[in-house]
Length: 276
Image (cartoon, rainbow, N blue to C red; front, side, top):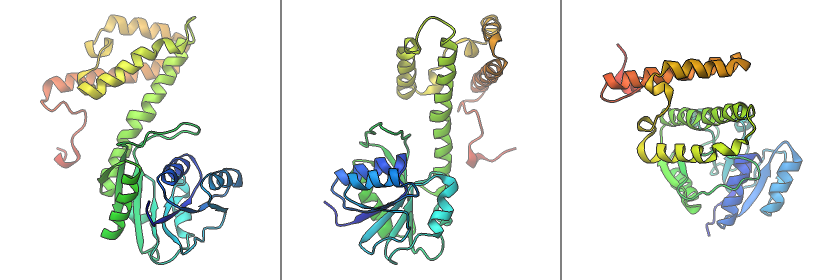
């Protein structure tokens, strides 16, 4: 479909998902670089590419997507060697183009705002891609990559993307941890975790449709101290979970007390509003 060959530095969850999706979209994959041969060679075999542990990329590669853990990103970028006109873009949400060494002339960020897991296929249709680049040509190239797999393109500055990445930590990682705690509490009954599935699905659906700030229910938002005390007693088997319960309850109660007093209902000041 496109005449822009792609290579990958990394063969983990993000690299695998993007590589397979772009391969299915008609792109030629030149090379997969990873320290682990098992993951790298499996992905390379899938998309008819070369596997290597060497970060030297062929001149035929137009775009190198760097999908490695954040703590490895700087070191990998400093050791990439490619043709001068090759665009190198990383997939990290918390870093901008300032992390690239000066010798890489065309650089960018190709950040998919999604959670990725092994052996779980992601639907890329309307998946947000937050892009940033060093020049207009690179912006257009990254935009074409995202749109070729039906992603939804947003150009975002580094600080905007970092804040959205932080929002994703709350919305995804912290939510998942609360579900893990919910499952742990459920284990103290004779019922399976799946009994909570309809509740979880309705909670997420309602938050998206009506706004999470308009969807809160439960004893904390009502400041129902009698129920709160009884539930804390039920958690006597785990002081650690009691602490989490107290922190979350206090946060919810304070938020809705704050919301009643301020028209915008914000928990925190907006970054552009300054502080007093």
